[in-house]
Structures are given as structure tokens and as C-alpha cells.
Length: 125
Ligand SMILES: [Zn+2]
Ligand SMILES: [Zn+2]
Image (cartoon, rainbow, N blue to C red):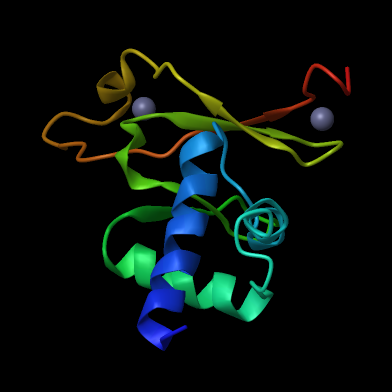
């Protein structure tokens, strides 16, 4: 198979994994799930493809302090994450917080925000 074709297949497999998962994934988790479609895939290719997809604006990096970076598709819309302190799973939260603008002093303008909630997930409580 031509290199270009192979690159496209690998990219599509990684995009398909991110499209079907409703929470951010570690590169290792992406690899495990994508191997079903492209058995020859390796971790170096996953990292390289994620970098390309990020540059193209198709994938976002989710950084939680003390955690390895996770990845999710960029078209999900505004949302936040919940990080389990025990099993370290990360979940998507659909809602946002009201009244954040009231936190800043007069004359300040909020352009964006990031919120991560930490605690115990349902399986760990
Ligand atoms: Zn948990
Ligand atoms: Zn928000």
C-alpha cells in the first residue's frame, strides 16, 4: 500500500475512535481501540497522527495537572471534565457553571475558562 493511503487509513481509524468515545482518551487507549481497524498501528504513529490532527484543529488536548495529556475531538462544543482521584478516569460534563463573570473585578473581561472537577466516580465511591 502507498504511504499516503496508509497514513489516511491510520488517521481515519484514530478519528473514528475519538468520534465514538464520549470522554478524552490517552494515546495508549486510542491505540488499543484503533488496532481493531488497523492492526499494524503503533504508538509512535498514534502520537504523530494526534499531533497532525491537533494542528488541523480536529483534535484537542485535555491537560489535567499530574496526568498524561488526553485527546478528544474538537467539535464537541463547550464542556468540562471530571477527574476521578482514585481510578484516574476522566469523564465529560455537559453543563457549564452560571455566574462565572461575577467572580472578576469591575473592568475585567473574561474571554474563556477551564474547569476540571476532581473527586470519585460512581465505581469508586
Ligand atoms: Zn473512578
Ligand atoms: Zn464552561
